Amino acid sequence: MPRMLHAVRLLLVMLVALAASLVAPVSPARAAVPESPAVTYTNPIAAQRADPHIFKHTDGYYYFTATVPEYDRIVMRRSTTIQGLSTAQEVTIWTKHASGVMGAHIWAPEIHFIDGRWYVYFAAGSTSDVWAIRMYVLEGTGANPLTATWTERGQIRTQWESFSLDATTFVVNGVRYLAWAQRDPSVNNNTDIYLARMANPWTITGTPVMLSRPTYSWETVGFRVNEGPAVIQHGGQVFMSYSASATDSNYCLGLLSASASADLLNPASWTKSPTPVFTSNASTSQYGPGHNSFTVSEDGKSDILVYHDRSYRDISGDPLDDPNRRTRVQKLYWKADGTPDFGIPVADGVTPQRLSSYNFADRFVRHWDYRARTDANVSPLADSQFRVVTGLAGSGTVSLESANFPGYFLRHKNFEVWLERNDGTAQFASDATFYRRAGLSDTAGISYESYNYAGRYIRHWEQLLYVQTPSTATDRADATFYAQ
Image 1 (cartoon, helix red, strand yellow):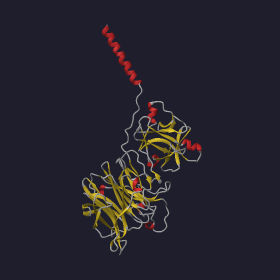
Image 2 (cartoon, helix red, strand yellow; image 1 turned 135 degrees about the vertical axis):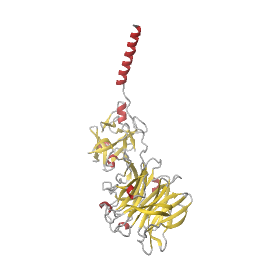
Image 3 (cartoon, helix red, strand yellow; image 1 turned 180 degrees about the vertical axis):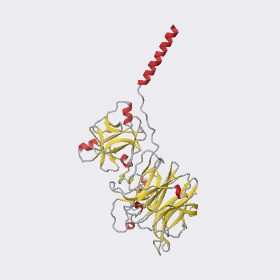
Image 4 (tube, one colour; image 1 turned 90 degrees about the horizontal axis):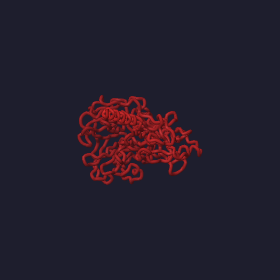
């Protein structure tokens, strides 16, 4: 009998413990700290600098070169930060020839470091024919390309002696390639995109292949153009952006994609996006974005899109005579399927960020029909981008301005969070102002406390955003975000 009582008691203890475990509070799930935290820059990086190329070297410096409006020289800057390039000393490393080839239209220089030496790829015309544009290479020796000794390696010879420009080089699986734009003399086109292997940094080998020809309507406005290829690799894929149409407000970016394990010299390995991936945006006053390159953030954790555009749409005369294309940068994001999301060319000034949920890693703060909420796979990307600016109600605070609706801010109304246009009133300023606090559930994150309702924080509840007083672990988790 005592054994039976002991067994019954033991069973009761186990049942009580099980019941307690079922009703015990469960710690809220949490997301990992993002691998790619937010980066912030202030645009533009450089006035009157087109076709920008920024290269981050192993010496800790960013090297920046671009087309100057005079089309007469190659310039370069360096800085340990991307933003620092805006004020860095600029040095002329090479000047056009007084006569003959390389004597006119010095365009689109790129700086690369290959096998211990510096190489600059550029296009140039001739004094006898400024439109006889061809591709050329400079080789530099020395640790610093701004003070290097430069040797002309001459023209890159291709399958035709025709209009060719915008050479770029990249390596996939140990093989070095050259991509460029060129006119096929047998076709009524301006330029197509071509690819070939390289025998050395100034010589291609084998038969070039055409990867893209301007056929879509957005590629043929003003001119039938595919040019300015730029390559970035991510998740086992190779992505090649390129510029299309005339160099006015119609200029835009297209995209080619291929598996890194495919035969890149087989055109069938590449898929072409049927729509442009980066275009003019009237809301942010950015026109003709294009001729891009890619670099990485200072911490190496974010990919950075580098490009030029203008701050106005209408141009008087030939766009090539307009000097005001300027260099800009912004973070490049990646979709869940591993493809790049270029978003929109953001407004001048501070670049925007995204805010991901602490407890739902794939969800981002976004606006939808002007209501603030959290969602996964946000499209368009800009719905989930906000500029963190000085608070409308005063210093020491912040306000969150929409990237694609400049002048619209997140504000609380009846303790719901909405995106609304700043009406200039003190009430709006107070409702749209927050204190940026360390994350309530993770100090590596961020929480936003209401300026005019102390103790209330922005939090998500059933995906919608509210301003509430957090009292539980779940509340605090819902009120914690990561900047990306």
